[in-house]
Length: 401
Image (cartoon, rainbow, N blue to C red; front, side, top):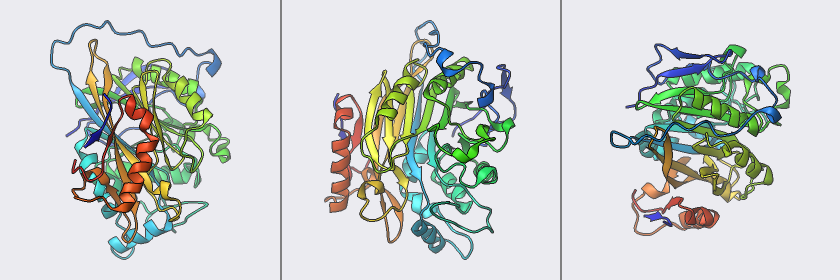
């Protein structure tokens, strides 16, 4: 039930540090090259001097073929708390933790989309290294295999935890994701890898995804500012404009912002997305950071969806932090060749324990909704009431869809 009111090929196009375009040959798999987009230290002018005016529109010539579509899923934080690490050990073999069963509940929906993007909060150690938790998370690299097995094509990496284990942690994490066949955006292990966007072919449509976190995150990064995308909103808008110039027909931005546990967006979040979308170059924003679902917003005719968590294990009394949204977006080709998000849905997900699993509530077929599901759904329904009136579709649990 919908609550409403009204096999992928990847070719890479890079923006080099000199601003010239280049096609990265031999990148036909989902293993993404990372040296793309202008590195942070190459910004030509301060944000206050950069224009965020819309990219000149391609003449809106009528399509000579049926409109093409691209489907995408976005999701909230993957944050491996101690009980989830213990669950992975139980689901695996000695010394070989298995994260696949925990995420299996969303696999069908994630893998069915043309391109699916997750958000990996925590950095990886090597397989023989120690596993650590708050305040310095370090996760077994088998998580990358679980992410890949679920059907995710890419992970956003920029967050307040990205530099938790320094450059070595970033390098190990990105290498493990690449080995598993998962692209990554938002962090870099070297200045040469510090491009801020990649333009890929997704079903022959030029698709760019960029990942950023709050500029105040990771103060210990001094001297390696290139390692994490921490750009100001005006620079993010400028990067989106550059992605358009590099040929992107769809531009998606992931942003990590918000106060932990706050079910409402803050003034800084609202101001940031206004700036990011003002130029008309961004088609969808995947928001996360507060660990709670926050109201989706239609800003400058662009949907911004705040997803909460996908997989975590906060304390039992932190009920909203066990809830999340899996967004499903259909982009449809418009006259002139650009694409527009014509359908935006939210699928409620819930983290449960004993055993630790992520449940796609809408995918379940049930005659009566369990009380905990009902509570989670009603809270999300209340949160998204305004967005639903604007066209956001919230899927109801037990609909079997």
